Length: 213
Length: 213
DNA sequence: CGTTTGAGTGTACGAACGTGCACTGAAAGG
DNA sequence: CCTTTCAGTGCACGTTCGTACACTCAAACG
Image (cartoon, rainbow over all chains, first blue to last red; front, side, top):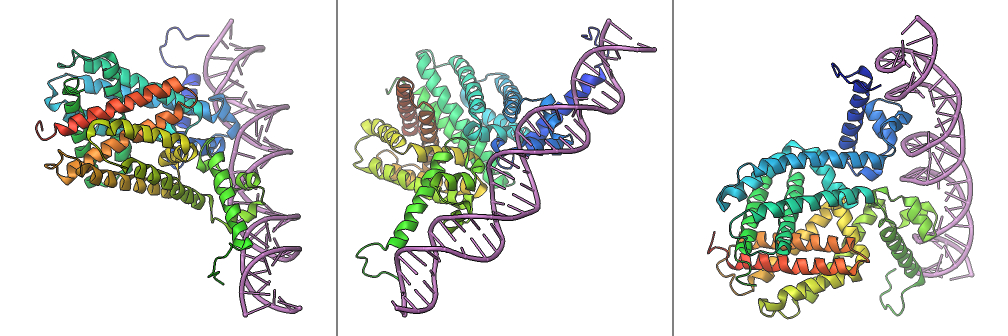
């Protein structure tokens, strides 16, 4: 039953995985216009080239499909986080580098970012919850990273969490704005500059924290 | 034709306005579950108690209804802004007061805030655009208010705009979080405290701006 | 090599959708 | 008082939807 010596993927499961991928891709593409909530099983099936009922071989419902897309999207984001963590130099250029990495990933994984931005606010409750949970994990990771920076010794864990939330919120907003500025490089450039300035403002506030409570 | 001496509203237009209001209210209520995009004309009509085709006597489409709801929602927000501007004392308590006013208005106009939060990200393009435009106006108003505060003399208009955007972004995020924390007063209390801390951090950063560029 | 498995097919159904069209009847207007 | 206006009615249509059910047929299994 189980192919222990995986010399080659059996064609059966290969084909199933290929169809599953096609469904995920089609859903991602189709939900770019409007929302997951208005995405019909039949639309997806037609786009993929299968009969509607065959959809159930892969997902129980559109909502289950949505949860799979959330997981997939956040894999991209974790890659981004890893890129960000490569070398943690002084504060001097950490801002520029962070924003650059964010922008690069937004372009590279446009569909996933669009999906998250939309469904975060308007998706089915389960999807919204899943996204909220992932973002919360992000905030926690950022907090532990921030704790490693010099000058944060006297900070409480609570303050670190609050600061992380502020930064993540600002970055999410920046990502959404960049998505909305597609095809207008000048507008995007301005947004990038704005994000850098904001991040610097926040960091300056953070570094002066506790001294002026 | 025009009732110049408006002794009493004629019953005809009164009734029409009443139905229009009922449609707006029904749409607001129904779109709380899911999105405007999945809201059907027939659902709204049934909720209101009219026949589907009668809907067209008031709106051309669900999207037009959405635009009307955007206008209506931002009337609430402008009321909030006016409340905020009443007396502009020292920075000392401006933060606490601003957050309190925001929270009060979120509770008072819950449906409108929910509508804006959802449609901002997932509504029809025209609706998204209208919301984005209104938020931009907010940022501009906030920028002119900030310019009146002491200590901002050396600021460029650009920096003011960037700061306003950051603050508005944080407040929008706070409002969304509070909406999501309905019925959990402890969680809300924590969110309020977080918002206050964040606003203070940002203001400290702003006040030290230019000195540490 | 015969048997089992399961991804994908084909048909068919009832429900909900947007909208066109002809209508009614009471309030507003002259 | 007679006429016009128009919010709301009632019906009918073609589409799209989710899903049930019985099926095929090739790969995988033993």
